[in-house]
Length: 319
Ligand code: TXD
Image 1 (tube, rainbow, N blue to C red):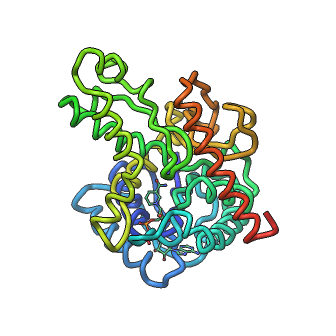
Image 2: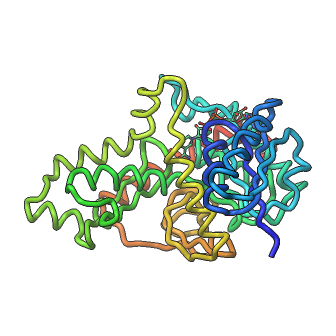
Image 3: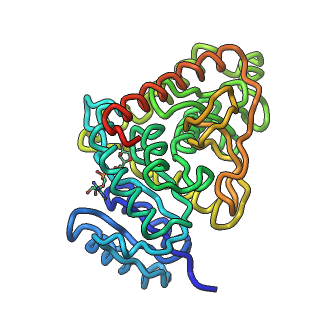
């Protein structure tokens, strides 16, 4: 069987880490694309030289030409500008919208059958715009945010309850922004919902509220520390988990930014919800019962995404 082809659009911090992980995990051959000349080629050469040490044969190449992503099976998009301290995700809108147009056209012309995972911020607007520009079916274009946000939530919960991260299952829904909705009700430690653990006296509502807040500003906390860019290890790991779910038809239930067609009372909008990812891409959107607080929070999040889309349409009338 021929090796799968993974194209990474954007060879920056996340792109490079994605390439490294894809090679280490043997997902297939990797093509790193960037507009900057030399960077994807240099990173590809460096990464290829991990092969003899790690024992992988994956072919890793760098390019500035969209023709080289031809017939890619999976495309992960991180192209654009990352947040700098003091910059909100939405400040990135204008710059990254133009980037999505170029990327969408590159995908449409060269790899229209790919499963496309968008990571570029502001995520919920960029994944929607990328879908519009690429013209691919909605089930084949998905945004990565919820896997990362849930990983952050789970990490903090594991610390709070002093248990292995393996015992923690958590869900973050809604937009990838300050309005995201970490759902306490469905987050568990060894299957026990957090509200029950609070009742048992293992934590308090105040401490969990603080964790929810820390999760919401989890990206900003890292930007503030790094000063020259944003998080990239956990975002790349999260993107790879989604790619694996597709490539290996794992039917994993992952929180992703997916196009809604009436679910959660939302139509024609990309919002973070639990979906099943398998060989057909987004195979199902899972609707879960939310309590009133989570519902209200989700609505705030949906309204924030809607506002971003209106802003996109204002910038690019072709949308
Ligand atoms: O959860 C999430 N979705 C996120 C999103 C978590 C963390 C970071 N998130 C966003 O991912 C972040 O705000 C950025 O929008 C992207 C990529 O983050 P990264 O840290 O990888 O940014 P870099 O290192 O600046 O890399 C971006 C690369 C860089 O090499 C540019 O030259 C390239 O994108 N770039 C382009 N590539 C292709 N085509 C075009 N037009 C282009 N413009 C810039």
